[in-house]
Length: 347
Image (spheres, one colour):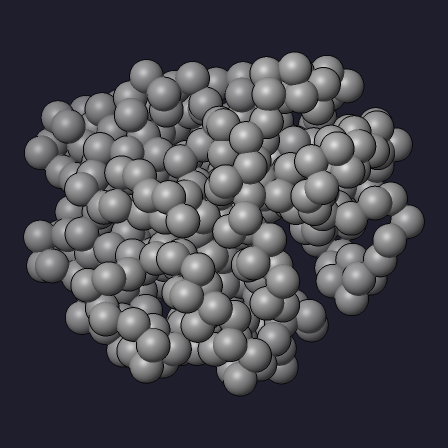
C-alpha cells in the first residue's frame, strides 16, 4: 500500500479508502444488498492486512449500524491511532427546523450520535454529507468549528457539492477563523467525469483532497457488459444514475476490459489505476474480500499516457444524476443564505 497526505491536513492516508456503505443491518437501512457484521469484520480485517488505514462511513448508512460494525471491528483489529476514520452527517430534518434546532446544535447532536455508534472519542474527518439549502452556511461552519475545537473531529470535509460552494464556504471560514474543508467527496469515475469541469482543477489549486465515491460506478467498471451481480440487480439508485447512459458508457467499459487483458489485471485494477492518477484516495466499497484485494492491487498498476488517453477518449458529457442533481433550492428563485447576520455572502 502507498500513502499520501489528505490535502491541507496532517492525516497520512492510504491511497485506497474503504467505503463502508455496504456494511450494516439491511433491515434497518436503505440497501438490501448490505453485508452482515460477521462478513463486514472479515472485509475490514483484510483491508487492514493490506495496509488500508482510511475508512469512510456515515450515520445515514443503515441507521448507524455501518458505524457500529466499523467501530467494533477497528477496536478489535487495529490501534486507534493507526487508522483514519471518516463519517458524515445529514442536513437538519424538517422537524428540527420547525422546532428551532440550530445548525450548530444539529451538528453537535449528529457527531455525538456517530461517536457513540463508533465507540470512539473522535473522528479524523467529519464530512458534510449533503448541501443544506435551509440552513445558513455560517451556522454549519460554526457548528463544525466547535466540533473541531472540542476535539471530536480533527478535520472537516464536504460531499456532494459544487466547486463554487466549497470556494465560498472556505472563504467564509477563513474570514471567521473557522476550520475549512480539507477534502471533497464527489461522484467521479471513468464513466462519470463531470467533476473535471470545475472541482478537480479547483481542488488542485487549493490543495484540497479528492476522495470520490462510486469509484467503480457501482460495479459497472469492474465487470464486462452483460455480467451481473446481486447489487446490480437490486441497486435501483445505481440504475437511476447509470442506466440512461449505458450505451456510451459501454464503449469505455469495453476499453477497460481490453487494457486489463493486456496487463493481465482485473478491470477493477485498471479502473482504479486510472482514477488514482486524478485523486488522493478513491472510496471503494467492498462487500467481498476480493473487492478490497483488487482495489489494493490497483495502487501498484501503472498505466501509460497512451492507455490513459485511450480510456478517456470515448467520454461524452453526462447529465448530473443522483444527489448532485438535487443540489438546488426547492424554490428556484430562493438564494442560499450564507450568514445569519445582516451581512450575507452571495445574497
